[in-house]
Length: 204
Image (cartoon, rainbow, N blue to C red; front, side, top):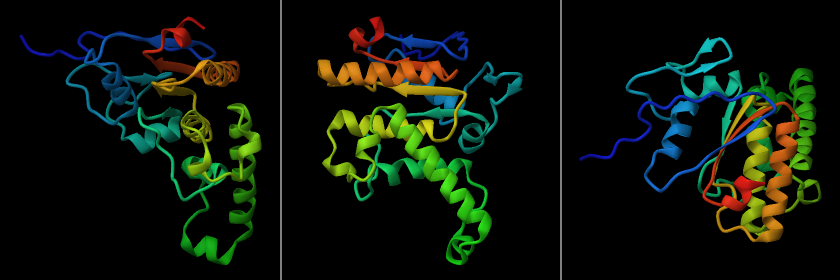
């Protein structure tokens, strides 16, 4: 008589493969992503990354271990450029950050900053937005903003990428761009889990 979400779910994701999770609204698709990413705690069962049990690990630690997620909404920072937005995602991989290191521009911080920018540009190229690096995110289309969010997740260097309804409202041309971005991601040896209502994307 009640709503049961993600009951008895068993799911295995493999690197270099894309898996689509489909179903009606309220079935628990986004909840499954939240559980894997650490944004919600399971009542039972376990979640493992390779041989590491991450069931009790917080989200930030899961990101460092290699689990990244995009959100259903278009999660970008409107005051930043596309490149700056992706650099925010790259922060998860930086060790020499902080006000003191930034203000003093220590050699380690400078080297790491240059490496972070290179990784962010590579992530933008992976999603087909290398030409929009200096464009303010407010000037991008909704689909482009979603691709920027995907690039920000990719900039964390994930082993597993969780993608929530990236193609919502996308036209045919935009769908092709999103498909190419996901395919390039898979070819990098990343395990991709896509929650999607757009069956055109699922079929591709």
